[in-house]
Amino acid sequence: MNELRELYQEVILDHGRSPRNFRRIENADGEAKGDNPLCGDRVHVYVKLDGTGGLDDVAFQGRGCAITTASASMMTELLKGRSEAEARRLFDVFHAVCTDEAFDPLDVPEEFEDEADRLQVMAGVRQFPMRVKCATLPWHTFAAALDGKQTATTE
Amino acid sequence: MSPDSTATVRPNYDVMAIREDFPILAREVFGKPLVYLDTGASAQKPRQVIRAMTEVMEETYSNVHRGVHFLSQACTDRFEAARETVARFINAREADEIVWTRGATEALNLVAATWGRTNVGPGDRIVISTLEHHSNIVPWQLLRDETGAELAVIPVDDAGEVDLDAYAGLLDGRTKLVSVTHVSNSIGTVLPIRQMARMAHDKGALFMVDGCQAAPHMAVDVQELDVDFYCFSGHKTYGPTGIGALWGRKALLDAMPPYQGGGEMIAHVTFEKSTFKDAPHKFEAGTPAIVEAVGLGAALDYIEAVGRDAILAHETDVAEYARERLAAVPGVRIVGHARERGAIVSFTMAQAHPHDIGTIIDRAGVAVRAGHHCAFPVMERFDVGATARASFGLYNMKSEVDRLVEALDEVAEIFGR
Ligand SMILES: Cc1ncc(COP(=O)(O)O)c(C=O)c1O
Image (cartoon, rainbow over all chains, first blue to last red):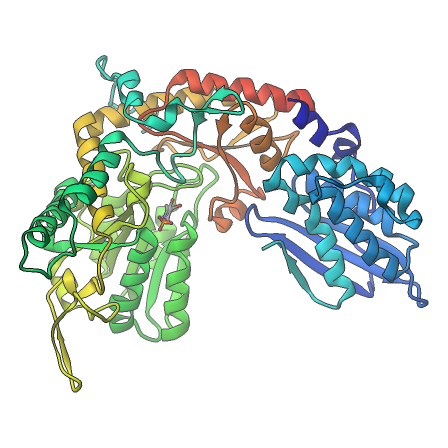
């Protein structure tokens, strides 16, 4: 039971119920559709750049489980205002949070200390290998949007 | 099937004794006794199947149809006896009408590739239903793209029943084949196969049935249904993976070109030309799944021994109990209310996504499938991204339904009521 409580923490449930930046961005500079063929979950991520290598706005739409939705919602909050390069490094941190048993927030570069703290709530997925893809789908989709690819998949 | 079905539970249906036959049902998952409600995806295996497969490997194994030696003959006899078992199981006229395949998917692809390529051309029509598994959609799309034929889809109503008027409208001189599922794997609808086949035949079309979700659960008589092709998968009928069967009318099979080329399927080969064996062997290139075929034969014998009417009555009883109990859980919506329905209950919960439901109840030892069930068009039709699906087998009990409902309480505990 404890592992379930760790997975479904209040923060995650809250983001899952009322996702932030759950909208479409008109005239987005990048957008991609991500899909998890295993369960049919889909997210559509939109990115607006500020013209100087920064992320002016990040938003998403889609239909998915609490983990996918919460992960996407938290991602949009964390990425706004970051540079593209920082965003990609933050993806690495996020990936470690979700998959690395030995992950220690204290090892994270100083620039991401706060983010690592906030992302720590996603660490519960480590005990649910089938659900890691739910957590990472929005981030893969975001990366695809940055790279000018139209689609991302967890497979 | 339906709540008013005439089938009644036999008082002597000994589910506890049946459960004893399935070693895996004794195991625990996360410290809780396993409640396996995913038989629709794949059924568990009784000792009788495991034993038959072990025995053939320990005592009788050899390649089939090849050697003059003792074991080759003995193994060929076992292998061909299993084919006869399949023929009896679906009341085929003869064992030569049974083609071994890897499963239903390969059977459907075989018909599309052989019968389809020789009989379907530009402007012809193939008809499927909204309820199909992807394996009864994609082979026909490939055939359509190759031949210029049209692929038409029978709609379903809000209950999940096929619209027979719309179906009638899709049948005309251009319709070459109707291929539909006997029982929907995603929402449990049982299709009126006999009636639909008669309608197709009246317009000169052939009729194929994907029997994956019917063969393990109810008596299937291909002559009585009066269809032209029928197929099912071994692993869903309490048999092993890697084996399944295609039944076709002998005259149709005889007229079809081979599927793959290789050993086993030829009568004679020179570099100029090869001649092929008769059906079913011309469709079975290469060394077949010998052990698996024997295992499937044992599985069908097992089903027959329990009794198909008894299985149907028992499963209907459990599945209808599940519908009743699930419907009473706050937030639960059952998807699919066909009058004729199989032992499959698909549902959503307002508070929680099926994926989250699946994860949470898994920790209580309850295994259900959460997702699209390889039936995207059904999910679309009922405007759900996914459902949670409890599918029942001959070993399930009402007390397991209670465990499912209890586990859903944990979902409500986390996600709200
Ligand atoms: C109705 C139906 N048709 C076809 C299939 C495909 O069967 P297999 O994967 O064994 O070939 C399934 C299995 O999920 C099914 O439920």
